[in-house]
Amino acid sequence: MILEIVGILILVLLIALSIGLHELGHFLPAKHYGVKVTEFMIGFGPALWTRVKGETRYGLKAVPLGGYVRMIGMIPPAAVDTTPEAAAARGRFATMIEDAREQSLAEVGPDDADRVFYRLPVHRRVVIMLGGITMNLILATVLFSIVLVGIGLPQPSLTVGAVVACTPSAEHPTGAALPSGNCPTGTQSTPAVAAGLQRDDVITSVNGTAVTAWDDVSRQLRASGGQSVTLGITRDGSAITVPMLVASVDRPEYDELGQPTGATVASGFVGVSPGVEYVQQGWTEVPAYMWSLTSATAQALVSMPVRLYELVAQTLIGGEERAIDGPVSVVGVSRIGGQVAAMDEPLKGKIATFLGLAASLNLFLALFNLLPIPPLDGGHVAGALYEALRRSLARMRGRPDPGPVDVARLLPIAYLTAIVLVGMGVVVIWADLVKPISLG
Image (cartoon, rainbow, N blue to C red; front, side):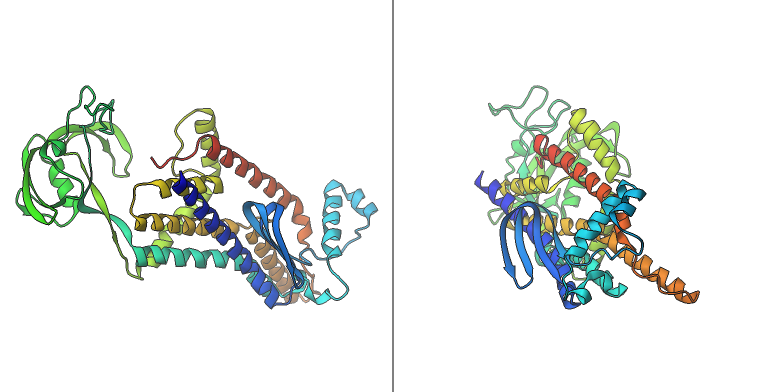
């Protein structure tokens, strides 16, 4: 229980660090370009801690689901009549937009005319809005580099990691023994148990042929169902040979995509699983690894609506098992961190998992914020680029500068997006509470 709490706290801190660095990515260039920043907050909801330094209020809030940097002048003045009567005549949305515009302009003091966001050149606004995404990408790259180059990727080793007690069957696929220590009806002790194989034995040969990788061992044993084999092993520094009769069991058959076909195939079974060794990768492997995960993350974003529907229809309503690769909230990620901390795994493996989770989260945040939808960072970038295009076309046609794009008109879309995101968050958090993902 203590280890689970420690794991949850570690993930919460890593999430807070990711949010803080994202907001710092906006804050630093904004200050560099002279924009007045009034707030730098991590989290939403009630404030847990605040401190005013200079013209900025820094703070931590109770709900660690994001953060924000408040810059003055995010919404430019309107180029049309914005009196309450005119806004009311145009409709409810117009009134809502003008209320937001007034609140934004109210933050601009007499000496702040040159420190508002909308007056910056387009390229500077793009730099500020991409700063958070850049921070997330940098942090993801650093963390993945530590995992790949410093720790290494897990690969099956020739060391026996576990010995299965009983041969598997359709009713007892795990091969676990009963509480009494006996095997369930229809199963029997595995060849590994009968031959006295032990955890941490190192397999060196099969039938006198030296092996250098676990795949060599697995391939030969699977092809030897019903036959006698002799394993060469090293135990406590001594080399011994272990004869055994390989069992034959029916295993599920999979297609070339790794999907079950529904058929079974007879295969040799001994009852050992490999241990894990961490093989350090070269620096040149980092870009390829990042690209692979970026592609997978982009595909996950595209399929998010479908996965959310499956989460509700199949899991929360249908009662099916939770997909381990489905949507997960910060609550679920933190619970996974607790499970990782409590597992009987080497410390190196736990550290790699924590860093990998944090790196994956930062990669997801970066790609998600790139979506050209307000109020996401990508929405602000799209607005700035549209403004640059509009000004270029005006110059080419010899027309006057059309001025800043009135981003206030996009507020209804921003509010709708926020409502959708909150709804999605509530669904996933609820799923993480009532039917959390289990790593087994």
